[in-house]
Length: 243
Ligand code: NAP
Image (cartoon, rainbow, N blue to C red; front, side, top):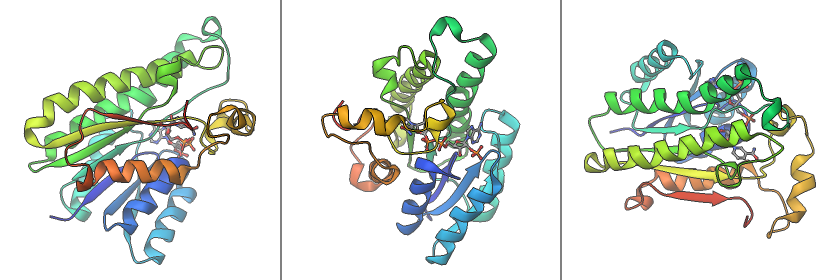
């Protein structure tokens, strides 16, 4: 069976590097994006120029109908989806919890947790064989991200619980579910949080003395999806420079 993967939020950052790496390893890749068609198109062009297989698929992964339509489109093109990377996520401006309004809190939960639930559910309901999911959580699930984004941290904590529970539900089907917890990775997400230079500020304080790259996260995701990690499920790998 062909290895077919959906990487959510793959137009830029960690998702884009993961999509490119997986394509180089022989996966047919669905490059999901929300708004930025141009960036997703560039990822697909990079992959196809190197001889890989990929196409861009627009869907808001916090919307059930759009998730179902995305899986249908991918299966029609490449066959059953065998691997899933729940990478799409958002964060908003740094502030204290008392400054977060309900609309923002719900938006973060929808984008980061509901998306993971919907994509995972749709994935396992269409899969007859073994397979693997990697959930892109965050070091924030451990730290709580005080004075920055407690809402974001809470969403990643929920994602970790979902990872653990689902891994145990699916173990007998040999569908593995693992999580990665990046921290301080050079991507455009920090600008959305209000501080584009955040990684330059915090990187030197980490035990490894620097921020990380999206490719360093992608290598770990690719390993967890691969058969080399065939005895690993319900596990979390911190990719946060030692913190
Ligand atoms: P990023 O550059 O902001 O990319 C996130 C992507 O998610 C965007 O391209 C966006 O698509 C997409 N997205 C957002 N909401 C979506 C939705 N509802 N449906 C479909 N796509 C959606 O972020 P990143 O830094 O690469 O982060 C990727 C993942 O790693 C996130 O889950 C993040 O929480 C996690 N993470 C990052 C860091 C870090 O330091 N960078 C640390 C810990 C964890 P469009 O551009 O098309 O709108």
